Structure formats: C-alpha cells, structure tokens
Length: 226
Image (cartoon, rainbow, N blue to C red; front, side, top):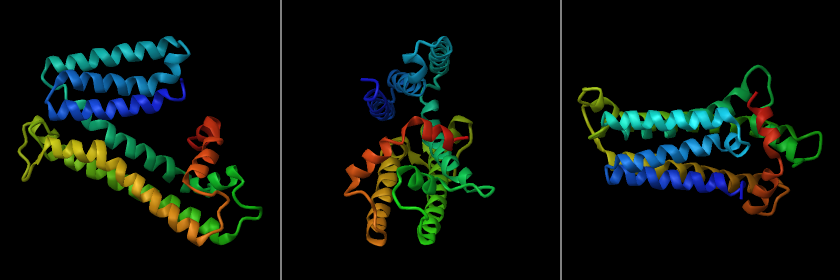
C-alpha cells in the first residue's frame, strides 16, 4: 500500500487543484494543499516522525490563514514552478565540476551497457541530461509567467498590478496541472523512441525500462541529489 500511496496522492492533488480553480473553491484549494503536503511528508508520516506531523499541522494552519484572507488559491501557483525547478536542478547539478551526468549514472547503475561504455553513448548521455535541464527550466519559467498573468487571482493582479495581457485562471490550471505533465511525457516518449533506434538498448519496451529503473531504489536517487 505504501508504494501506491504517492501516485494516488499526486493524482488526488492534481484533481483537487483543478476543481479549486474551475469552481473557485477555497475548500478544494485546502484539500489540494493538504494532499500535496501528505505526498511530500508521507515517508516521515508513515514512520511516525513527530517533525513530519508537526510540519503537516503547520501547513494546514498556513493554508487556513491564507483562506481567511481570501488568498486560498495562491499556493496552487507554487508547485508547478518548484517541481520543474527541482527537476532541472536534479539533472543540471550533475553536469558541474567533472561529475558524471545523471543519464550516465542511470546507464551505469542499470548495467545497461558493458564496460567500457561506448564514447558515443556517454556523449549522448551528457547531451540528454543537458536537454532535460533546459526543458525543465523552460517549463518552470512558462508556469511562472502564466501564473503572473492569470485572471482573476493571478500573482500580478493579487499584488495590485494590472498585466498588459491576462489568461483565464482555468487556462493556467489546464496547462500547469495537466499539459505540463503531458509535455514531460511526450518529451520522454519521443526521446525513448529515438534512443531505441540509435542505440542497442537492453530493454524490450517502456514497461521493461521502468521495471529496471524501479530496481535502482531510493538510495540511488539520494546519492544523485548530493
């Protein structure tokens, strides 16, 4: 059940965020914020760590405080921007200072190619890591830009500044809570198809690839984030 919890919480957050915007409901915004908090804090909560429960209580109090000032929808603008920035950092920081790029680390951890690895594959791994970094930065900036011009509760209008053009808040939500992730999926699928045509890969299809990725485990990703 613990393995199924994060995807369910993530899906619940996206649905609640959409409902909050389309219904202009502070109640659904509160549900969305709490679901996101549960998603982020779930490892600590499941282990019964007091700090995780305290953080959840503080989050709930903060969301209620924003609601009391008619700013309940405001926190919904942050996750699409912060998530894309985090993913950009996750890929991008492995390109610094002679480190092995993230895609190369995945290749080596999966044992996807015999040693020594073909230099063409290593070059492609670095280029692909850079491409993902740029892609996520672009998505973060686009999400931020749309949040700024959203109407009626966008960042600029909330600050008392009238932007030169506006986008209905429902349009922002459709992009940030749906199309944003579809674009990530499309980028991955197109690159995966290209990779299979260019290189001899040791996995049969997408499902086999994800099974091998799942075997890397949390320790691998913790090491990448250092």
